[in-house]
Image (tube, rainbow, N blue to C red):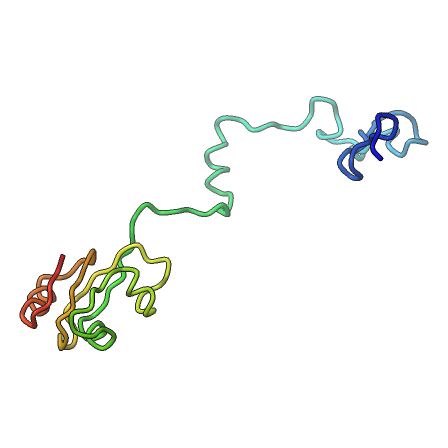
Amino acid sequence: MIEMHNLKPARGSRKTVKRVGRGNASGLGKTAGRGTKGQRARSGGRNKLKLKGIRSMFLAFPKKRGFKSGYVEVETLTLGKISQNFQASDIVTLEALKKKQLIPKSAKAAKVVLGGEAKTAVNLKGIKTSATAKEAILKVGGSVK
């Protein structure tokens, strides 16, 4: 049972502070964990970042944090693939293309281009088309919205 007299922090949540320069018996006496001699062994020694060189340092550091582009990459599809995977009068949306695995699940936009024949009259909804592909779809009896 938790009561006032037996409260204590979780194990490992608190670290004991290293008391430096308190004699050799402490394990951090004499040089106080700084090694021997040199600029970094002295108090106040060690160059901090100077404004002048920061930019070149940042450029030299590896870019490990990643970058997310604002540019939406459009996945391209041919009319032939759409006519193979959809029947006549089917509504082709971005979700339908993802479900049939014609485009990756991460795709934000898709575009249909002319390639192969438009055999089925499909209805495109929310998908970009090239001028020639649109013409071919309308000729077969499909629609583009």
